[in-house]
Length: 320
Image 1 (cartoon, rainbow, N blue to C red):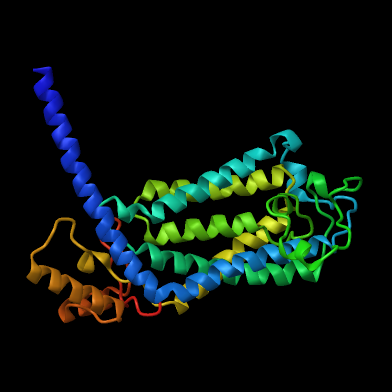
Image 2 (image 1 turned 30 degrees about the vertical axis):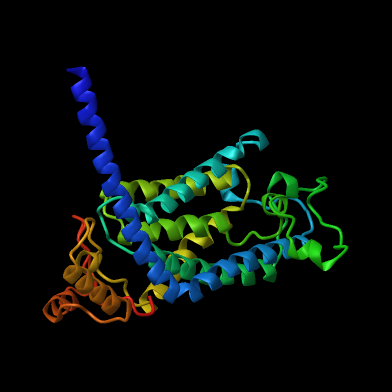
């Protein structure tokens, strides 16, 4: 009896594994097709992440340590200390990895609310706009860093003039990133956190996770101040700046398409069905709706989505 049950379980797992592989292969083929057409802005967004790191490294040469400024958050929140400063980084890592895994969940699960390539293009657009403002801000005025390695008496608080241009261009990664000074207003960690939370709030489907995400953003803010990595003003400015940037940039970007109408099937199709699916995907990629009646209905809904997992969007993929 146990042997028969074992055989049934093995057959079930093999069947489900085959379905999962087909699902991943189908999703990958579709995402690669989109990537081949939409890679330009993705690449620019990734390159700007390096430029942002280069700017943060450069301002460290200008940083001059001094007395820690008076800060209301420092008065209210007890100092975690150097030995517990990892807590805020741990929370940020959890937020970052959770969002990363969520953006790739359409490769495995049947829920197809968005295209991974398109959502990362959107995320990078929000990040770049926020980081450009951040670079202008922290180069305008250099404040004495409140972090432990940026205070008076620390050897890391100031950088000697670089010996070569390569020393600057290589940004001493990762040490130069972890022990930077001078790039204060406003917090880079909060840029990433708030962009991730805002994107999930719009395209996610679980209300509980949305509430938890905002709670994690608040906790992250408090931990950054308690660990003395930033002044309170760095976090406060990040909260209203990033939210305003996401709001206005999002208004300028065409909405992503509704996946419920143009999603690729899980199981193999006949030749006729394959041709039809290919034609529908091609229309989506070129910004044309598949069904005129369905398009009109979505337009009337004005781009809103439902909490039960069915997105309704008013515009197509073209340029998003």
